[in-house]
Length: 139
Image (cartoon, rainbow, N blue to C red):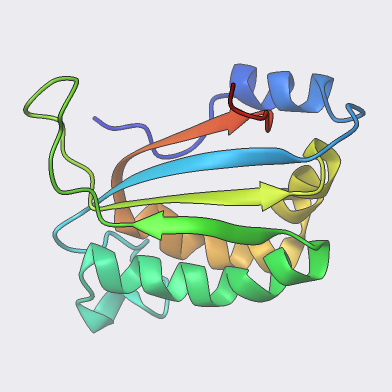
């Protein structure tokens, strides 16, 4: 079973740092389900979407929320070879979102309209990693 949504401990860690100043970068690693797994009563359940198609719906619906916060996707790509790490590790999509602050990201996650879109992410994702980073200069 993959990691799809944060645990209560992980949410608590984010909440504890909500007052921290400065931007954060969130590294996202996504592995799609072959077939999206929606709740039976969801309107998209009968559409027979792939995980990638469901994730595209999530991203399209999330884009206005990201823009409203002043956040932005700073890099996106499709991983194609593990050079260092477990050879069997596989990700379909990787991207980095820069948020103005932890509080800004948390406000998005708590927004009811965002939460309606998040069902597409849960249906789409077989496994994921979301890694919070503090921006720093190299060198």
